[in-house]
Image (cartoon, rainbow, N blue to C red; front, side, top):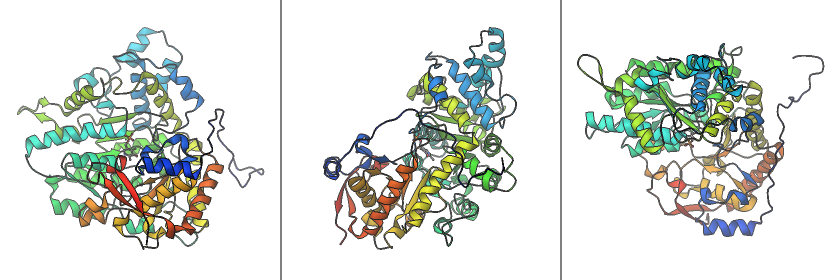
Amino acid sequence: MNNKYTLPVPAPHHFSFAVRDIPDVTVEQRERVLKALHYNEFAFPAGMLTVDMLSDSGTTAMTNHQWAALFMGDEAYGRNTGYYVLLDTFRDIFERGGEKNWKKILDLVRTDCRDVEKMIEEVYLREYEGGLFNGGAAQMERPNTFIIQQGRAAESVLMEIVKKILAERYPGKIFTIPSNGHFDTTEGNIKQMGSIPRNLYNKQLLYEVPEDGRYEKNPFKGNMDLDKLQELIDAVGVDNVPLIFSCITNNPVCGQAVSMANLRAVSEIAHKNNIPYILDAARWAENAYFIKKFEDGYADKSIAEIATEMFSYCDGFCMSAKKDGHANMGGMLAFRDKGLFWKNFSDFNEDGTTKMDVGVRLKVKQISCYGNDSYGGMSGRDIMALAVGMYESCDFNYMEERVAQCNYLAEGFYDAGVKGVVLPAGGHAVYINMDEFFDGKRGHDTFAGQGFSVELIRRYGIRTSELGDYSMEYDLKTPEQQAEVANVVRFAIDRSRLTKEHLDYVIAAVKALYEDRESIPNMRIVWGTNLPMRHFHAFLEPYPNT
Ligand SMILES: *Cc1c(COP(=O)(O)O)cnc(C)c1O
């Protein structure tokens, strides 16, 4: 690799061959539509935007191999072929570390294997147990893997069943569920089960920036604060903490990476206290990439090997596959066969036999809401595209380009003099701390970060997402929860979709907006303050900053 023709810029690893045009839209047109739709960003038509950075969820440009895989989609109602492919894809990446069976079932399907005996032996009846993805009859006897079409639905199935079981056993009791950073939908699901979400990270570290804005090594700012975790368990009592979460990468805490050492340590604390440890694994591949690049001892390991170690520490996971699944739709809920989650939430007879398996309860919920366990809300073709996308996310070169785009944007903001940029960039997005952006002059009740977002749409046709005081419901929280809110706006970067030209346009726009920040309006909520996940539906109104 290191030859005398090495250049100071990296060699590209992909190119585009389908194009979508962007229309010209005037400021007046955007203003009219914003006002008519009550300044709710989610309601703003995508077709009127120049750069849409609202979310990287399901927005990926798929590869030619994924488009090809769509044609192998099997839309059968029971045990479609893609079901076997997808479960084995997860085993390959999350359990086998990319070892010798890599893509075996995907390739049997791609090459149209007609050897029925071989298919029975190696695919249809192949037994797996003890891991996160039971196979063959074991998946019937102890269901532990639930395909669900997106992350929040997986969370909601999990939270609803956990809530029911806890309410049966401890009526009226209120539980606390800590995380390094709960995503907004996870918080919403926890609150709807009547429990208290807590976000235990180091906020001071998050906002530290080195002299020139560049870290030599990623400092893993997404880590859970272990002292805070132990303190919380001691304060509320171990019996009041039914689950511990880690979000990898830490999306609400600015997409920051979580180190393997931290995952290991949280898992030790959880298990010492007999608490199941659950990963929110939307960005498992980005997190593995950061570990490979920056954590000692992982440089020579593949993304799949690192993912396998990450998942070895958990008792279960929820996952939005719309992120690092490199797919437009998909999700997964799984727990370890006979692991701690299963033990704590199943009911047993006195002789130790199972009275009610928690996996069966989850499956009932899955069937009643999303479809049977063979597809769980996904079409067969989406399942195939997801399987291929999962493997593609294990490509180091792809990850390197993706994270380099995030850094380009973050460093571009920093070099343009914009205050409050969170550095280093996250794996999927760049965040700006609104408290610093506005020189600490706007109060928590002004929702100025939302004003920033609305103004970026109005003036320049760029949509971001506010993930601070407004979306994280600062005004509805207790003082200790308020201290855990990072008042940020997120610029999400779609996978394989944006070019340097888009990023340069965004940098120029944010620089211009920064220089004119005094004129950015504050926002007030005129309807929907108390609705769960209000930012998806509330009505807003700007008012001048005086
Ligand atoms: C996107 C996301 C979710 C929710 O997933 P959806 O697929 O959007 O429903 C949950 N957790 C994290 C960390 C996410 O980024």
